Length: 309
Image (cartoon, rainbow, N blue to C red):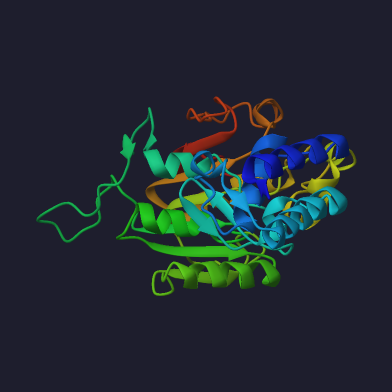
């Protein structure tokens, strides 16, 4: 009989020989192999160490090796093979209809968004002020997740702000089908409304306290050189024109009309900070700190948004 440790070592060796790429939930061969080994054995993804010396049956070993081999052979992200992705402790169903969830916005929702400008000095998990029937300017009561994909950020926003109503919009009906499943899994159907919309096109007349968006932002040159794992994801959810800013420009042009007074735009833009600041030299972008550093996510208050892009 073999052990979990031996299966894990075999998986790492197989992945390294295959020259796989990572970034869809893990960053290296060891973590990727551990995730798949534990999944195949029906074990939680955070419980590797206690099971390393566990002996597995021949049937279990074949199941593990088949999954590891499929990852190396197909070059599909592990999340697609096992139909699950994680943001912190939160699990989401995914398949090839959506990109695999990965966003620094998750960190900001978990920790609260600290800002250095008025009129929103702090956006955090505070809820309605005691003794008032009106909404507080310290917490959002209406949220839009634009380009929602799997619905993960809409769900995390609803969890972070229990009093808020959330619209989750995407151009892809396939993506919305996946989001619908995740919303149902989290029992948030009464608070999250799914909308098919090309950016703001189906949201005329609607405005929000907070707009979250992790739109496509990969530039054309990068699209041509993406590792095979990334090419398994929907192109529609990645590509954004020659310089990667087509969607960002459109969002900045329209966001003011969809934000309430005191409202906030929170947008992820990947590695495009320098290009964006060149394109909008008069716009006072704020760059909250994330685990990747500053420059991956921007915030703008409603009054700071350009009138037109």
